Length: 289
Image (cartoon, rainbow, N blue to C red; front, side, top):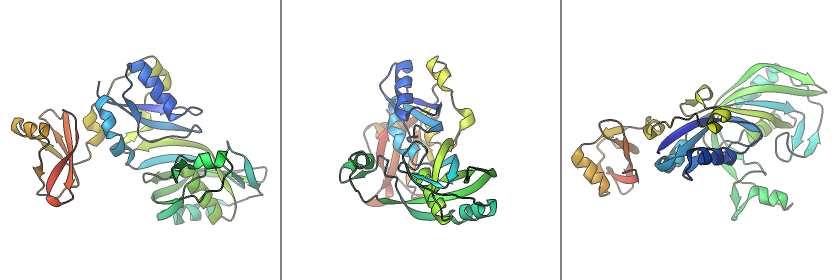
């Protein structure tokens, strides 16, 4: 049983909870997810099964799309509505101001990770410092915001501004941190009240299995090759399959970074990477035969 499943993770559960359900239903421990969604979030969760767990790293690296709901005028320690309120003020922000802020954040920048995150500092996760009430210098990571757009009209309640936006972002982007940064640009505080991952790479929310269907066992494992179909591929001969089995190098005339090796029926056999010591060669990276 090797392949993947697309599941619509529900709000209020962890990504690990979904993995555990899939493991029980499929009766295998070899299940891994490809990008954590916070309990407050829902949406696309790609599960790799069997040998496909070797592809988690590649799938995680793809760009992701989200629809986020924001409350301006409130700051919490978790940067979302589940946290403890740190600061609060009236924030009546116009649609034009919000759209301008969204436009200015379509860029690459150094984003500070949230305090409540699993990013490690000196061997400890950031949230461990938070729970122990210890100070920690939060690291910054380069992220790219490819596209931001306002969804519908802002609305106002008790002196606060609420709005939704759609974001297409690079791997490692924290939407909670993006909301904090957008709020700062609007000279106020901000927190996330809801988050839906609508797309990961080429995988869309409308193609995802519901949690109820997963628990009923209504699953159809999709082929591993789909996870890497966007990379250059090489259809190998029987003789070349032997080279793969023996871990031999291939020539890399076109200087590709990654090449997917498949048989005549598109069964994934191996993934090769450019050899760092000679760009004219491909070295074996992940093998499935």
